[in-house]
Image 1 (cartoon, rainbow, N blue to C red):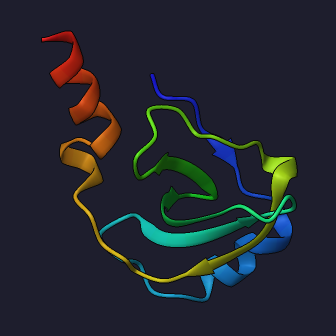
Image 2: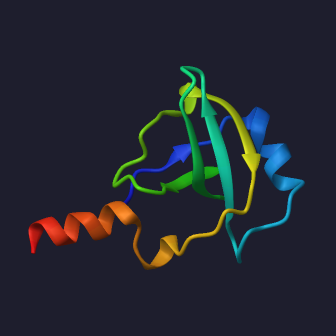
Length: 91
């Protein structure tokens, strides 16, 4: 099972006030306290479930400085870039 990162509660109300990107999820932008940002982050039920291009979520809940909904779609349910690259390397 994929490791999930709980979104800090101070951002969950903002997410709940916005429309879903697809059924049961939103795609958001996450900015970290160290200045890094991730534009395609899939979230559901107050958790980060996937970050585009990463096999594992590359940050912890306490690293998050801001979260904003952007609806930048990608088909994360069918396999992310990282998983595709991983399959190609191991094939």
